[in-house]
Image (cartoon, rainbow, N blue to C red; front, side, top):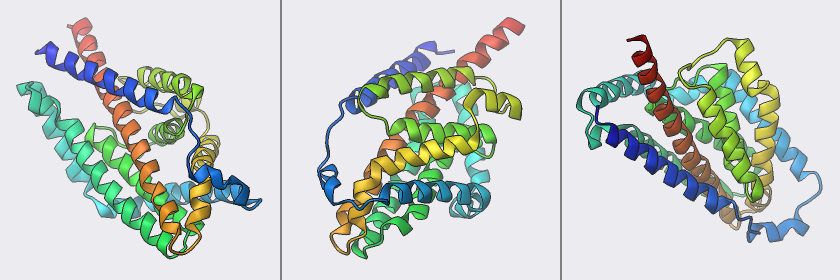
Length: 276
């Protein structure tokens, strides 16, 4: 095995993760946050409820609709081919194929979010845009997870992705601690892509509670943007925030799924050695 290639992948991941955390560890007041005094009472709770409902609806009925926008089976087959090629060839091109594929999907979804967010903002559509935005966020995570060999259609992956979204939106001093917690979670679930419901609940908490936490993180981060997005024409500025938030989540998802993939690979190799 060309160990140095995989070590370089791990070192590259570590550098990018440190850069991400450092970038978001400094909490800054955005231009949109200066609109705070204009935001009507009750908008926060409406946003919280809208995001909760969007996640619940998509998990219950929407995943099948999202899957019509790409070929899930082909993506799983592409991963298996890439994994085999990386195992046999172990050169730079094949080792990096997983993140390259995931990155291509992420860029396309950013484009979709840009058109959707700015377009609806021009029309003055704010809160009704939320189910569409959540769909794009989850579609992006689904495609990234498939690129690294993880099927999202399990309780564990839903909980992992919801927590990933929540953590990606932290800023300030909390960002480092929450990121450390995510890294611990990635390590804890290595080598086991699906657990019993009891183990899943012990590991990541109840799904309903995590939906509420993730919905609140999104509502807090997008409050001022969604307020502005409800105003025709000017709302395009607020709608553009959809792209900013999606990119932040997407970048973080790439880091964590890449981490899981490398941890799982190492775990499987160590396990094979001990059994041999």
